[in-house]
Length: 119
Image (tube, rainbow, N blue to C red; front, side, top):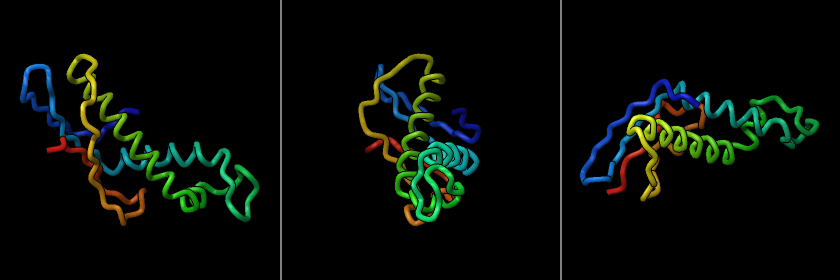
């Protein structure tokens, strides 16, 4: 998925190695969350509704932990794809990206999503 608010800072500390810091804004977060909720909604079992028939808002509330985890994973994947395009070749991720976000905020209310190199 195209990230319209993506800001990248790419550093090349050693030959053949890059370090990336990335930031994604609320519109991209909301798009990833919406996509995850739509996919989950197709088979969601929410009390009081037939399977796959619950309103998306209720699906998001009922499966909030899963929505958060999947949306974050997809954001990291989208960032990695953008870095590959910017660098111009494939690369191998050496360390697990370390996302920073407000853990207490509802997933659709996050203002930004940032990934920093581990240091």
